Length: 284
Ligand SMILES: Nc1nc2c(c(=O)[nH]1)N[C@@H](CN(C=O)c1ccc(C(=O)N[C@@H](CCC(=O)O)C(=O)O)cc1)CN2
Ligand SMILES: [Mg+2]
Image 1 (tube, rainbow, N blue to C red):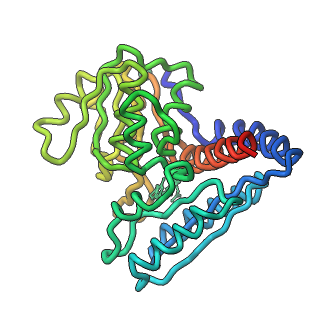
Image 2 (image 1 turned 180 degrees about the vertical axis):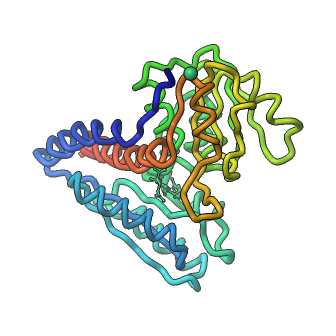
């Protein structure tokens, strides 16, 4: 029987602990603070940011949502980041991606105080991860590691394939897997025969943004399959990079879409905001 890696269920479980952590911080006079900056009118981004605000409210985290027009200049955005860098009641700063073309995301990542970089995308935090000394970690890959661990899956010694090399998922995912003693291949658009690599992998993390890219023929029997994709089928239905219906008969464990990796991303964001607030509590 295939094991369903249920991110929704694990998120609900983690909510209980996070509420307790927030209550404990409150006794020290600390409310975790999260600043979320959204530039432009990307419809999906607005939904994600609204979900973050709601989840923060549920947990007792104070969130400040900044919705800026699509015409915002890079200088204006950097000034706002600087304001939150200096705000003692803000523990985490997140700039929702993607950004409009006039803003260079690299400049944004360089501007966020690494101690408040709740997304873990800044070069300092990415460097710490790849130095084997992780601090703040990108939320989607961190959520995947939590989901694997919660289901008793130890990646040590596994041949792992990460499909995608983005800053948000592929690169930090590979770093986390290396730190956990997996042997990692990172595939991307120029990779020769990614499917042949998939067929000999014990773990596949698919983050390529192509609906049903991984089929049952690409999966070794008993492999663990993690789907980061959020793709639309021609009928508009949400699906992933993995052909779930067929792959589930070959894999030993698999994440559904929706309800697998997605919910864990927001959960880890909240959890890291709380961890950063704990750091503030210790310093004060
Ligand atoms: N600054 C950041 N930008 C972006 C990130 C990020 O981590 N930091 N990740 C994505 C968007 N994202 C959060 O920001 C995100 C996307 C999707 C989900 C999610 O829960 N997905 C659900 C399905 C939702 C649906 O029905 O459409 C699921 O997979 O179950 C959470 C977070 C890009 N930008
Ligand atoms: Mg099976």
